[in-house]
Length: 325
Image (cartoon, rainbow, N blue to C red; front, side, top):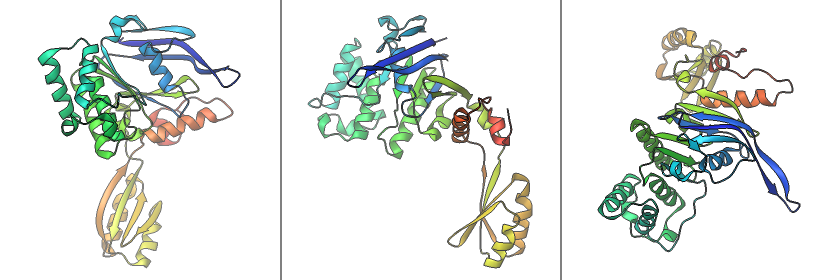
């Protein structure tokens, strides 16, 4: 096991009276080498604190863990990881190259090898044109990409990213997703926190949902790919209003969007609706199966956790069917 946290409790003193606020409450977490693992949860669920504990940046009040088989906080283990915090700070007077040279020196990198590594990473995060620009002149998204380059500088075995998509536009988010997939393909391990669920489905092998400082449930994302569609969205055009009303009786819902009408039907109802639409002179513009998503499961887990009576946590199959696991 590459990393393991066992019965981790962590609290912080806050406010004028310095009262203790419990953030982690008996957290259990295990990640294997080669995984891309996502930590999900609302603000205050304990995602960032979990990452700081495993990195040795915060000591737990109770519990223990290991990283690369060594106790948390040991320098030998931390040499094998790269880290991007949620709100990284930069020396604004430095250029992008100077900043990465400084980081490389802390990692023990020198000479031609460091120069080549910096050039390759600046190109990979699409900052080669800003290599000589002072950091105070870079946008938030550019600084986030520079932080990613810093995290990858030492070719780490474990990449830890706290909200890596924060502040990024769609091309920037795609770049981060591609980088995570590249790390997985290279046999590296990625652990990151996020609230952007669509990105998790794209790049992860597992996800854990944190709630009130505990791991509420874990999801194997390959299970989602095996789920059948629960509904189909059928977009039609060329229909008269009377035909739309008639075809709507065959569908779960019908929504007009300009000259198009989007019908939602069950998987077994598609053929009948298409046949009726073609007979009415309509045209099929698109047919999109809609399966259960990670967001559906996340919301269902949250809903059940908030219910007055404790209920078993759902499996992906139970969320799809609407029944108990």
